[in-house]
Length: 101
Image 1: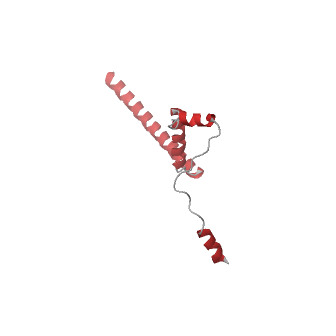
Image 2 (image 1 turned 90 degrees about the vertical axis):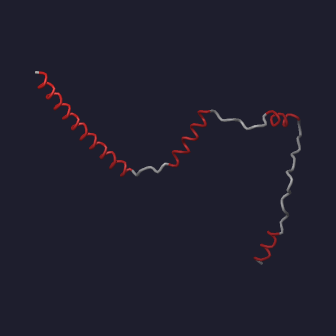
Image 3 (image 1 turned 90 degrees about the horizontal axis):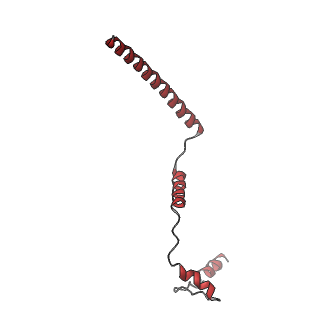
C-alpha cells in the first residue's frame, strides 16, 4: 500500500518549461509593470539600518557574568592608570619646581 502511494507521487506531471503569461483584464493592471522595469533602490538610511541590524545579528554577545567580569577589570585598570599618572604628574611638578627655584 505504501509503495502505491510513492508511485502515485512520482507519476505527477512535470511543470511546464515555458512561463505562462497572465491574462490581463484591464489596461490599468499593465501600466505599473511597464512603468518601472527595474526594482526600486532603497533609501540610503534604510539600507544602512538593514545592514547594521544584519551585522549585529552576527555578533557573539557576552553573557551577563562575562560582561560584569570585564567591566570590573576595566574599572580596576582605569583606577590603577589614573593613580599612576596622577603620581607621575605630582612628581614631575615637584621636580620642575625644585629646578626653577
